[in-house]
Amino acid sequence: MSQKGFFPWELEWPVDQAGYELEHWPAMEGSSLLGSSPPTDFIRAQGGPPRYYWPMQQHPCLYRQFAEICSSADGVLAFASRFGMSSVQQDFRKANGQREEVSAVLNTAELIRQICARVDVGNKPEAAGLWAEHAMPLVMVAISENESRTGFEEVLVPIDLRSALLLQTKDTIIRDQRVRRCRNEDCTEYFRVGQGAATERREFCSLRCRVASTRRQKKRNAATAAEHQLHREL
Ligand SMILES: [Zn+2]
Image (cartoon, rainbow, N blue to C red; front, side):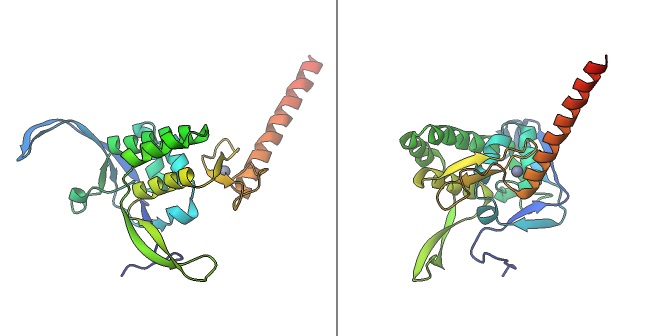
């Protein structure tokens, strides 16, 4: 049994603390029994000690960040360094370092971007159609006490980060949720607003971001004031 923290039935996902790197594999002719393989880009874990987090509970809007950040190989690398790879290919588990094909990550991100674009303009039927046709998350089913503690309910437990992101994307279609991006320009977090979530007026994902943004604004104001002063003196 693995050691589980706050959410015994939930996906706990590793991030390699030594980081990740991009790896290019050239085309190989007749390299295996299955024939030749085309050139492929991978993202590879360096194999340091992992730290774990709970994507579904700690980052319920992670699918938005993923879609925003993973639009290039460098984006895939940047995302992995914070949230780990989206899934690990079985064949590579025992080989040196864990790998994932960059194109697989880009495809998932593109799907989520297209679904979000439709949800954001209120076109849920098309969003649902795209999800049904292409998402295919891998999940286990668990049982948990319901919120009012009056009985039990089923819980879908994603088996990897890709599946978790796709379940979050499903929720944005079947629930009435609105999502907002943090106004701190250095931050890529999203959060929910509206019923059962943050108030309509909320602009930042965290106190830290609010403080950082206020500080930057003050600095800008001070710089502008100094410039005006200089112009007056000249
Ligand atoms: Zn933020």
